[in-house]
Amino acid sequence: MTQTGPERLDFLIRCLLKEKEEYRDIGIPADKREKQRLLRSLMNLRPPVPASEAFLKAQDAYLQARLAERGVTDLRDLTPVQPGLYLWQGDITTLRCDGIVNAANSRMLGCFVPCHGCIDNAIHTYAGVQLRLECAELMAAQGAEEPAGRAKITKAYNLPCRYVLHTVGPVIAGRVTPQDRALLAGCYRSCLELAAENGLHSLAFCCISTGEFRFPNELAAQIALQTVRAWQRQHPHQIEVIFNVFKDSDKEIYRRLLR
Image (tube, rainbow, N blue to C red; front, side, top):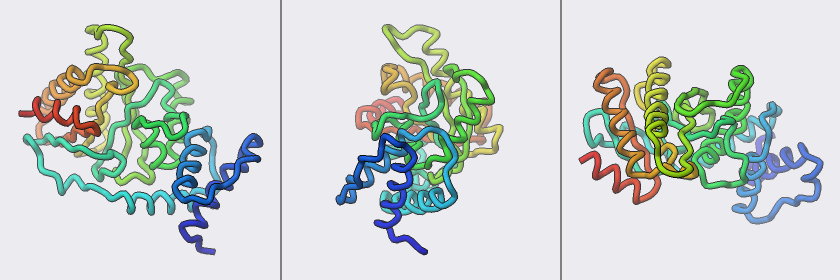
């Protein structure tokens, strides 16, 4: 039986509520936005375990419909600010390019805080529950948490990009040390190298480490630009880079530095 939008949303919520005994007293709200928020919360909390084919089919249809509502920005419609470099302000989960970079934590499983505003949460939410499961499989094979400055690549599932590259930036607890600078530069280099190895020709970077990890925004942007430019000089015409910003303040920093 084909589900309508409201039926699909209710079905997904019921499926997730049934997975945990402690959810048995949670009711499904009547308001659509509250339903969407509840679904996102349940997806954020869900451990990396397989889901039924029926759930995945409904989830994918729901997320594709949400993507259509939010709108997609295609790299081909953007204008570079310099050869091979773009500056774009927007929601990275709506960008169509070869790959986007996720600012992950060392567990590499996404954000488990319901409806948290970090990019890790958004990427896992709109990709679908398959992404956390693939990340868990990668981490199980590794047998240890992910160190800062490296990168891993996964499918993008319901995102408009082809791949997601996950990298862990340095966490700043006081002043920025030379090691912090080197680790942040390593994030950008590792992502570019991994993207090249996998045949990607475009890659969108978020502002790695500048949010919850407290790396100063101006210095982080300087390191990002220096590292990307140096890599592109060594590998000309190989990967176009989009610097994705969300805040107006970050847009102004990058606009000034790119001038």
